[in-house]
Structure formats: structure tokens, C-alpha cells
Length: 252
Image (cartoon, rainbow, N blue to C red; front, side, top):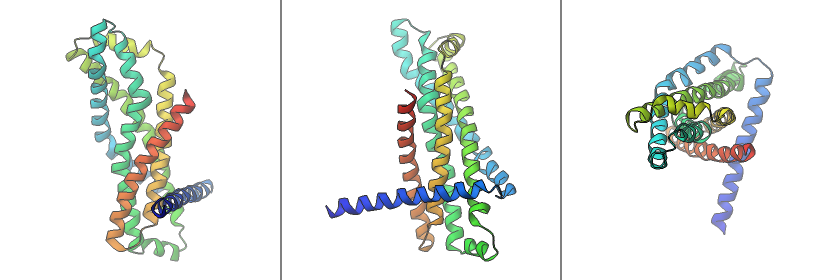
């Protein structure tokens, strides 16, 4: 019972801390006085540098979805459903989740490490001594960059996932790529696509808040930074699946 109680208190403390961090970020962002140069820098760091890994993840995700569903579609002769099945899975579910997990491992962990290092080396205290608000100068630009870029990365990833699925359909399953795309576009998957983009925005906000919470809360030197990065990755992954469940439930 004592262990259960400690776990409950730990979870409550984490959720409360993340919620408080979100409130502080939104309050700072509402003042519209955040650092624009830092925002552009973070848009480049978290977005442009993430394109290669997102594109590779998306292409293979689309290919795997087609291979998994293709064997059953060909057995029934309903090849026109191949694009619908793969498109639905990629656009609404697998694509946003996998891209979010890759994003949390690359960008979220890096953000926690950066902020944590600044915390233990007292750079954040130095900003306060210079009357510079760390929330407006460091945190809000990272929050905005992650939300915007994960939305764009999700949209881009969906496109490349469909391309990967079409190529696999053509060269592996011998189903013409035009048949594949006809199945995608004739199935009215716009709602699923919008749901996937909503997940991208939500995952971006969740990852940014979690990574900033752990980064700003680092203590204990280099070892503390390592623990914070580990906690950030785990908590971000849990948050992605929780929000995925909530959005999927509300959309259906």
C-alpha cells in the first residue's frame, strides 16, 4: 500500500507540475513579447532538421501498412480497398503516433537536455538577474516551434507515407499505383486526415510542455540532466498514447 501511495503521489506531482508549466507558458505567450529570433531558430532546429527522419519513418510506415493489408485484399480480389485501408490507418492513427514518438525522442529529449544544462550551469538564473524572463525568452519560442513544426511534419509525413504505400503496392504487390490512390481519394478520408493533424498539434503541445517541465526542474548536476531526459521521453510517450485515445474517442 505504501508503494501504491508513493506512486500515486508521484504521478499527481508530475501531472500537477506539467499543468502548471502549461499555464505559465500560455500566460507568457499571451503577452506577445516572446523572443522572435529564438522562435525562428527553434523552428529550424526542431523542424527542418527533423525532416529526414520523419520522411524515412513515414515511407516505411506506409509500406508496412500496405504489405500487412495487401495479402488479405488480394485474396478477396478487392484491390480497390487497399488504398482505403492503408490510408485510413496512416492518416488517422499510425502516422501521427509514430511521428510523434520520433519527435519526442529527438526534439523533446534534446530540449530537456538544453534547458537542464542551462539550469545546472545557472544560465537561467543569469537571465533572471538581467531582468529577462526565461519563459518568454526560452520556453515560449520552443513551445510555439514544436506545435507548428509537428503539425507540418505530420502533414508531410502523411504525404510520404501514401507515396511509400503506393510504391509498395506497385512494385511488391503488383497493384497499380493509380488503383491505390483511387482507393485513397474515393474513400473520403478528409475527416481522418484532419483528425491526424489535430493529433499532431496536440502531440506537439504535449511534448513541448513535458520537455520544458523536466528541463526547468533539473537538479543534481549532469546526473540530474540524464534522469530528466529519460523521464521526458517516457512521460512524452505516455502522453502521446493518452491524447491519442482521447482524440480518437471524441472523433468517433
